[in-house]
Image 1 (cartoon, helix red, strand yellow):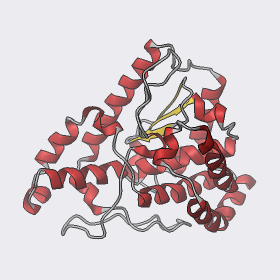
Image 2 (cartoon, rainbow, N blue to C red; image 1 turned 45 degrees about the horizontal axis):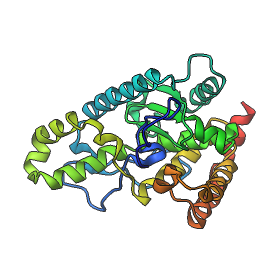
Image 3 (cartoon, rainbow, N blue to C red; image 1 turned 45 degrees about the vertical axis):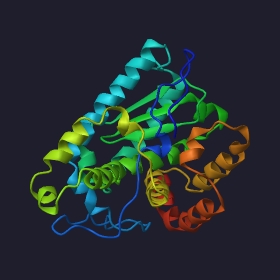
Image 4 (cartoon, rainbow, N blue to C red; image 1 turned 90 degrees about the vertical axis):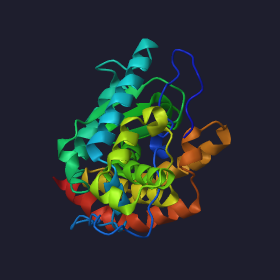
Length: 287
């Protein structure tokens, strides 16, 4: 997504990436010695292995950078009186949904059990939401109000954004782009990571302008679908959500859709995968 236009006190200051603008794809090869992460044994959706390229970027360094940027964003929103206070009903709802989703995150990424998850709400008409590396989640009021999202649909958006962080799309994108641009040798990549580590530490706002590939978007759709189903949210809501997104394109100025284009292929893939997670949803509802 593109950064929000400067604004009014209620306009957001958030990252462009929102539902996803923040991150990119994977190559079909893996450098020797890097290895890949296998899918969770009980996964019902098939998204393949996570990119081995991501191992070229230290996860801790990237998460620290993301945390710093997230808190800077919140400080800017607070200064403009655009940050929702504790107890605000929409914020309470978001945090309640997150509490149901987060316990199912670590099966997709063991690091997630140690993440300091945060959920915040920023007052803005923008239709946007995001989850940064390390579990830093933010929604804009625009996506809740203008699309009139149900709890199930909010869970699909949140699961999708969490999936980008869990699948470490940012790490992969940064590793690929930076390793290419600074011409690291294979030996340097495997042994030191020094230049890449420094690059990540000095990313600044670049972390908020990375873009996801279609492959990453598809992965996030399916992993998010499963996360939400395991948490007891109706998987059919994912199809309804993207239909709403498609209808919203006529309103113009929706940055979320520039990075998460909707269309029949996206909806068709979700429809094909809903039956795969329906049993998880029904089990969760019985608990």
